[in-house]
Length: 245
Image (tube, rainbow, N blue to C red; front, side, top):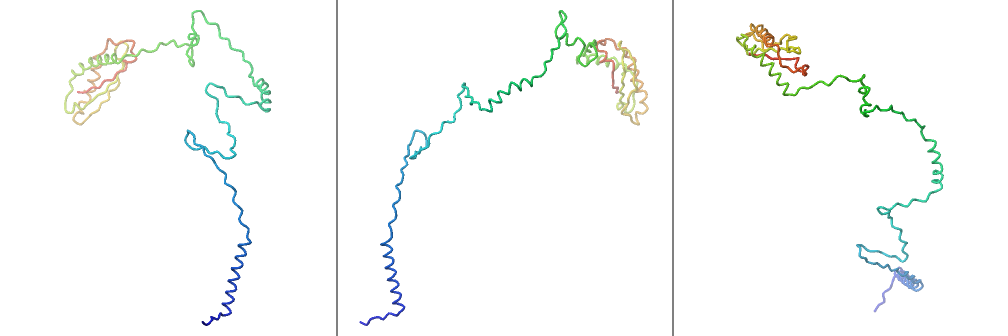
């Protein structure tokens, strides 16, 4: 069998490969073995009655004191005074002494008269803010029923005189007279203002003057309006009536 001739490059490659294997074997033989890993520390876990797990390490820290205030009814312990607190406490009496206001002598009230009360003394000189004693009694106020009674009495006396006044014609129902008048304390007429007429048209123009005169005449003929309550004069002295046909 004929031998295979290797070229120079092939011989050089084989020599380098062999040299590499020899170097690898030498490194493996001469290299130091790796140092063993330190033993793993064990951690024990304890399961209690409460939910969750409590872990304990080889050197657990000391348990801190619980953050708990005084129970109800107990007095919280006072902190020990420091040097600054003692100094401020020593200066406090001096500060309070200087801050005391000047003494004011009390005002003596005059001796009360026998049989008088504190209320009488307070208002003996009149109402505060007023001038002297208020000697005017409060005005009487009529009830709604009393007002309705004298209004009805005055109207009933005037309406009879008004209905007897002969005023008629076209559009007479559109005319309206408003009359204001004032009575004296006996129910007599003090004054009558000029009537205010509305609803005037071309058809009733001729009846405006008689309509006005009849309204005034009816009030005068109905007076005096007797039986009016004297104590309520300020409430019934000014009157107003409306006249229509």
